[in-house]
Length: 393
Image (tube, rainbow, N blue to C red):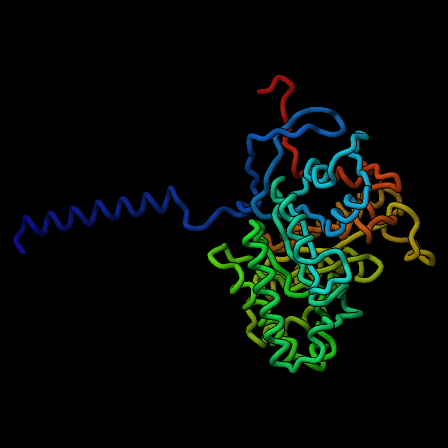
């Protein structure tokens, strides 16, 4: 190579090096801390139910200000009318949206469903929510009705199957459910494979701790069914949901064993009720342990508190008064703990059934006449409502 060619080669290398350094300086390869939670505005306007002021709502990239509204459609189909904090009757979904809620959680039950939440019901509610901009967390109850740590019954049509046949049934049901939702335009953003599965599911064959191998087979089948059903749609995040939100020991025991099966999943969901799962300090400790040990994003997908005297705190007082204000203080406190989870791993909070059959007692966001309770509905305003100058600048 002659001197001219050597000079040109060196000159080109210098230019490329400068360009590379410039690019690295102006375009960091990692996102700034907290970037995922930075909201972005949209041009649609919403009127404040309390003040009448119009404002631009915030739509959040990840953090879930959520509610399990599985029974809302059932209530409204039966004629129940919900009224916003200004006394105006509105569809329930609009009331939640107007107060900063951006995620909906819906359950689905295996046919023959003994609860209203079969696939068609859940699709209809998800479609209504999607039209209002909600993101969608699907909670699959692998049962004909309720499934929780005290009872995880196998669907009646699966009870006499062999274990391999039951694996196929879980796969087929999950695939077909997700495919039907995808075709209806409501492919979930997150899917729970089972509800509160700390004691397993599909009892007795998948009951824990005695049947971990069978339980793992069923979870695998559910995960594979989600992938098979979504088609070309974006892959939903996979969540494993357990109930013991305030218990480090149980969380450690469950997820160490669970992870030994190399089951692919993305998120951990907890239930956290003050009468079952410990104190707010316990929740804080467990979320920190979970984030630092398992490096997964975390949501509290079920919580609740009473706005009137309940049967749970008769002997000793609860952490907050059982009043509308105390109920709101509970939600604010739980949400703050989740937001404080190390490494930004806390991704949201869902109240369980604030407008449905399970929440029409003292845990509801509404009184017995369907009037919205202002304290609980105002909790997320500080995070979801921007401030506008009165001169519109």
